Image (cartoon, rainbow, N blue to C red; front, side, top):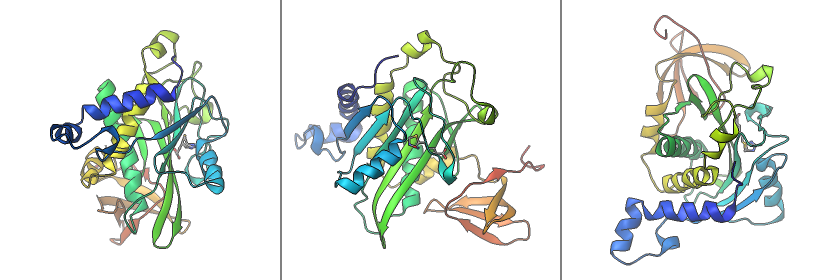
Length: 289
Ligand code: BTN
């Protein structure tokens, strides 16, 4: 498997920019150069291994004012973190684990909406490069063939009402480690390309993959119609789900994903609930199966 390399990622990123329609339009009028066509050029740092790229980025932010588009990427996390204090299994050579620093320009931008950008960016990149269609499980888990292949952890800092920054952590499983996932994950976790083998892994260009995800992420920041795509790919619409409200379990049917990315659910007793965060579990009902 090739090494993750900043230079290569940037070069693929710039190459991808030149094939975008907006870039072509700008270039036709000779008004633009690579870094002024509206999409930012990220600042990428690769580390061989670390505890957690999200934790590292947050620690760096305490020390310095990092710019929008700072990206920290690694091949292996020893203490990868998931939502709700869970661990995120991040074995070496089997995936990409990275954090993107986003500083929304608009006042009172909705954090939930930015996280939908990350999900849609990964969906677009994986489709573009491998012709694989991923599904999204609200809020931000990506599924392939019934298994979770990507998790997203967004951690922000607010100065009310402005979101000062958001560290968008993304972990994408490319290969299932030899011998499979640990028991606790066996039923849940999956990967894009199945069990690791050297030959398969040589054919996957992780630098290009990362560049393509970043390209879509930063282009989506400029687009307003991301939610439509997010809804289309979502597994939850119309499904009966279980969720927690103030620690109490509730069951309801998902009616829609709002324009802020929230989940609107009608409970069994006909009450309407709006979820801004958290997780839902599918409940099999007659209509679902
Ligand atoms: C989840 O599935 O609950 C979210 C998982 C997020 C994992 C990514 S990997 C890169 C970044 N660093 C972390 O420690 N977590 C995120």
